[in-house]
Length: 227
Image 1 (tube, rainbow, N blue to C red):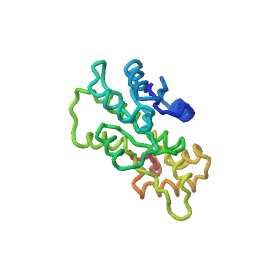
Image 2: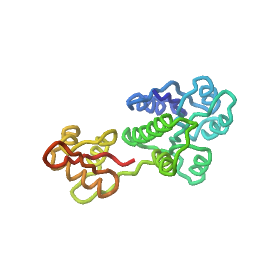
Image 3: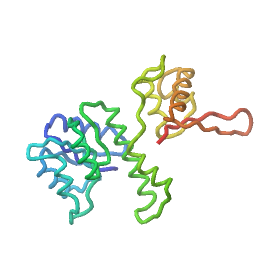
Image 4: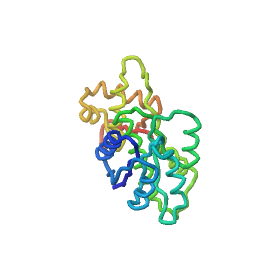
């Protein structure tokens, strides 16, 4: 399980984010903090893998938490996804300079939240499967950098397609390759509808189409979300 520390000055928001964490496969919320001081102490004590970090805290900027934890003699600094209402370029740039692996602007729903955490889990798993001392090639480096920046689902898909259904279909093929019939069963839509959405995702570069050849007959079309 990936251990998460939630940092937000609003206890209601913090609770919502902790519940979102619990709903996302492979994650657990190990603590909540509402100030810079509390967050630094909790991070050093709990040793989380990931911080969900608000910027506006009572005793300073949430980015100060990253400053104080950088070079922490007590262990490696956890990764961080900044979750905030701050939209100014200066804050975004500061978060990037401090090594935040994601930036999610409030307000948002569970789907957007889960997408960021799922992307982080993919990065986490891929890095650990390679081994920290391993050498890699350019293709693998590019893949590692792209994992935490998942390709967005278009806000205004082609005529006749709905964005919520498009997101649902894309989520269905995120973890494994499926046929159109399997996507239809998983999402509750008809097979022709699933096929139409899958074809659109492939055209947009958001999904890959593969062919699985059996002992006889036509090859089966299998779809999987692009990284």
